Length: 432
Image 1 (cartoon, one colour):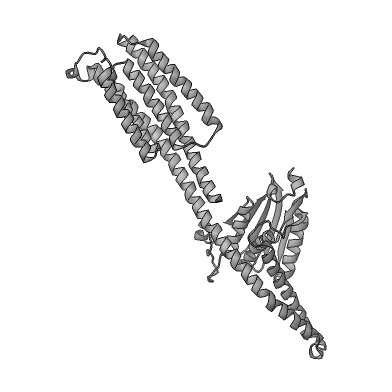
Image 2 (cartoon, rainbow, N blue to C red):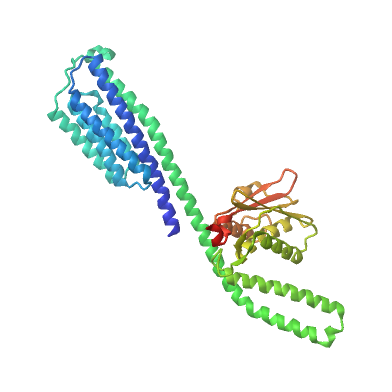
């Protein structure tokens, strides 16, 4: 449902842009009609019903002002509303042609502009409505209007007034089509591109949901064997054979530590399955959360050198949970795997965002991976199912309205940038 709403929003945005193009085109038509009327009467001495033509022009101006006010406030534009706008344009054009020669007016070819706009902007049935209406209007003009008092002098070629009028009409239609059809096509392509992006995002989010269900099921299944191992290790610690051997006791202690870590991971999966901010949410502060996460990660990983800089001077209450914690740890784990000798992390706060910069001195990302960064199964490790850590990290950040990006450093190694909006993790009282 969320993706359907986003797709509808993309279509509405493209429809709104197209409607604004029609309003702009209508203003050009107003200027063109004023110029044509003045040229015909003053330049060629034609007698036209000026009062009635100005009345039609005033109605067109009023309609365009109302349209601008209407669509300036609302962005949802339907096919029927665009059809109505084009029919109004056809109606005013018909009225002006009726008052100025009807079908004998060379500007009668402007009906083709309305038909072409309808073919680009409207659904198929609506386009045929425009074709039918314009055909009936042109036939009606031929039957009921009075022709212009122009001499029939086609043999004069370019010196003929009618030929000159047709030439001007052709140039006007061609210029308007090039300008506005190009813009409208660009709007349509932008809308299609956004819809394609939303569909891709829907597929990725569905993949995340399936992985979450699998992880939740696996966590339930792992609970029993982990508990059994914990009992066995406790029994071993009390047995005389192990209790009298310091080396074995040390190894048992290490095994218990790692077992506790596995149980904590399983508990985190069960608590946060399906939600980026679920029942596992914990109230804390930015610095407390980050400093605790870094200390826990450093103690539980075989990292030789870890550089951590927390440059957040203004602390604030926030809500963090296990999904977000796991996302940051995934990025750190990837950096550690690429660069066992050194990993760096820097935390900053600016412009309403908290930013985490994770760096390493490894081989960096391949260009193909940077192009598809965050896509599932894009990995340089060569293992089946690789690349899911970064994929999950990107989706957790995106759920919170943030981003995860990557680049290769000029001095060597890679850099992953996590940016999260403070509004997504702040406590409710802070948002207020």
